[in-house]
Image 1: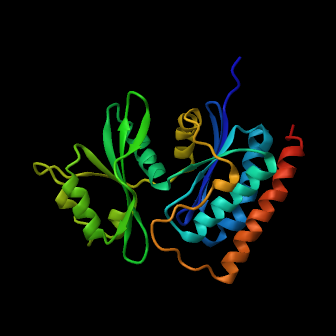
Image 2 (image 1 turned 90 degrees about the vertical axis):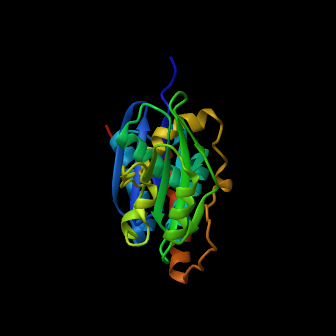
Image 3 (image 1 turned 30 degrees about the horizontal axis):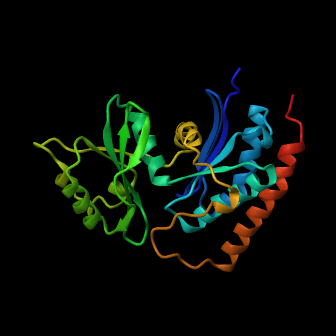
Length: 266
């Protein structure tokens, strides 16, 4: 009998913290406020979900982490915790582009039965948006990237997307709303029909849905190769941020041993 795949996924690339756990078709998840508190909240949330599922960290097939782009501190926190947990429990990690998770969140909410294109447009702060463009292949239930990830002013990104003339394009994310006065949706109208917009997020459940295919494609890596995905020049960390992230990784290593050796609740 084939053993069910078990994945733990998390993303802290936005001001939300999303964590989810799967065992076959069963899932447990938490999606709530993160931001500056993610470094302190992430490990206790992981512990709580493992307890709910009556699993130990060592029972997992792999970890799945949203590696960005997004909040610099959030990306560093997620990658540091993934490294610590994976090193402590001898697990591999599947790093996933967080904008692709946004596209998957939108696709799942729309439940399209055919091929299509989704452009993830997320607030990048500093008056800019992150953009990732993906093609969904229904026959294989997999995504491919259409172009390299971009960051820039909303007007420029909208114009660039419009020039691509992608059929049945869906816009996903929060960038259109945050910059509604600077991201001209009328550029995407075809025959007077407005473009579809979905308020999607990089949800950990989206990461879980992509995990089996990525695992089958052998896209899991050793923990030391897990790094934040930046598409903008890095912003220097404050001393407090650096200390918090270092502590998060240290805590993850320590807790990994506890997750691995402690008995699940009855």
